[in-house]
Length: 485
Ligand code: ADP
Image (cartoon, rainbow, N blue to C red; front, side, top):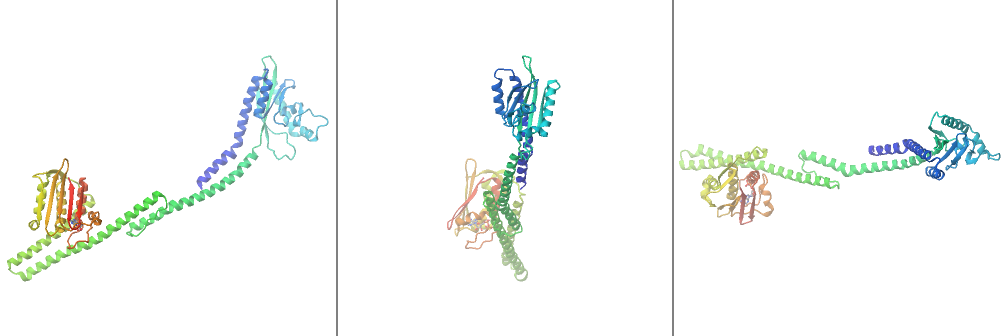
């Protein structure tokens, strides 16, 4: 609406308020120019045809008077009678010669009207001043004296310009130029009524546009904002709606995607809390039970005590692995971890990791296909964790042959590491999601004790290294987890 109001104000000022002034000053400068041309031409042979053309072109009358008030030249294109002709008695109203006895009353009245008399006085004063050399030229605006009583077009004005000319032959003349300032009222009336339509049109379109914009733009955005607030409060159900505008639709789509992601993570987090509590409770129960057994029953039975202590130690290891997984992931989440890259032997690291599995490394057969030494530039501890996590999975999910193969293949710039098991494999629909935090696939035949964090740690560390990584897996045949350093 403000925009519409500004446009209207601009139109009003230009077309109605300033139009009159603009028109007058334009007319005035034209008359002045014409006056200069006529002055220059006076006394030349082609003066008459020149003056006639000029008069018609500019819709003005031109009068040349001698200094004894005789008309030397006169042309009137306005059809109303020349002011000068009337003033000096050469004509009377309507361009007829000096008032004839049988002139219509209308004409006589006009000649005798006070406005004509006043005009006569003024013009004659100018004429005298020009002749006496008091002034060389003048411009004067009259309200038109040629108005019949009851004429609606009052306010009509006339512009008179006059100048004294000394010709080369030594003659002196007075030139008068006279033009109508057509009343602009009718024009401005037309413009006003047009403006009224424009106002109506602008108001309607302004309303229409605000309605359209609010419907198509503002409302969807408000809705999206509301839904986003609900999302922030933990309500993952909001469905973000676009409004038909491509950008807003994209935004809504993205937010829906984000909401789905958040909701999934939230679900996984809940599951993790449940899993972790369960995973913490199981070893703790075992530790407590075995400790009590040792206190109350075992006595000095060395064999039994050893057995029970082994269980307690294994369960404690399991607990600390779980806790360290959780710590790692939370540190990675905070982004507190930075890489400390060094050059070291990857083959040695793989061997070390295998021995870390302790008794398991006897139970499972690890086959390492690698050159004697492969030097890589990476964060040793973190890559150790990657290898450890992938191997733990390989052990957990390996097949009955309990065989785990590690291939280390150095290429030109990169070294490819593959950790292969012959276990259950991963169905294609799960393969994207196994890297997600807290994600644990449910398809396994044997229950395992993972946290769902192992592979997300692997992913974070390898991403930090800018390393390529992935998994190739076939259900029933096994998986090949690989990465490049
Ligand atoms: P978890 O603690 O459950 O092992 P991970 O993040 O290490 O968590 O692994 C995520 C999921 O990926 C596992 O729950 C499992 O379903 C699947 N997975 C990982 N490694 C293997 C593998 N070698 N064979 C089959 N499935 C695997």
